[in-house]
Length: 355
Image (cartoon, rainbow, N blue to C red; front, side, top):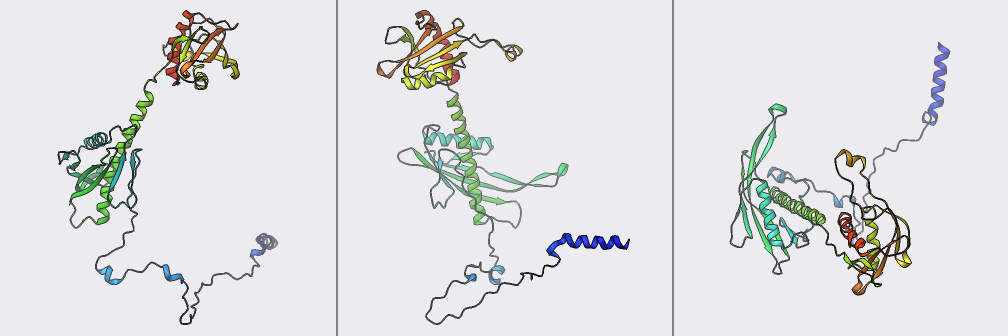
């Protein structure tokens, strides 16, 4: 038993390596600042204590003056039409007219009204120009208790004045929020200047968010609108029936690629030098999921399955003719090309192509 213990001690010493015999002294001495004696008339270098935060004096502590360590409340110009000016001291933001807002003053006034309707807070117009408003009382509460015993206790209520100031050119306006009145329900509490600014900025940020949401909704609606289609039946330079678009030749070449999957066309080859696509057409079938959901098969082209050529050519006024040829290079008849018009237009709208 004694030999086993001695062996364990020897192994532990070997495994510990140099740590057991490390005689390097610990560097735990305090760094001390050496005070230099500067001769008279010489510049004094900066000392480490030059930028120390001064301690609060006893007199200021007794008088109730405390340092506010909270971070400042910032205005968040999250709407695409909103912007801030440098060195702004008020709770104010600027709105610029863009494609989503239209006339800026009616748009901002409507969003302001909708915001307070959603908050169930009264908003009163205080002038005839529709530029100054006052809110009703906005009551704020604080949660107390937990689970089934949780309750909301009213803390205070505030009222705000909101002013819109459009520029003379009518393309921009500012919105300024100012705390008008405040009442505390808790005795002994009062708002500081920082609290007042934080309350004003908080309300302004919520109105800006309302504007941002409205802009996003308008943007989605604009994208969902049916694209204007310029395609129409016509003739190419040789007098053969074709589909004519007002887009230039290069644009038509690239946009036509978006339609192939919608029309169930497979590109087998192409020759950009003569602006020709070689495609194969197969009639679309009703897939499994369409059968399960009782939907009909995708709309097909009034063509016989097989190989075709789609040839683009320039027309006057920078227009482009889209000619349809069979596999032997013979143009389709006027009736066949006219029958292609409706399915192709439907594919353009489904793909969002610019044709």
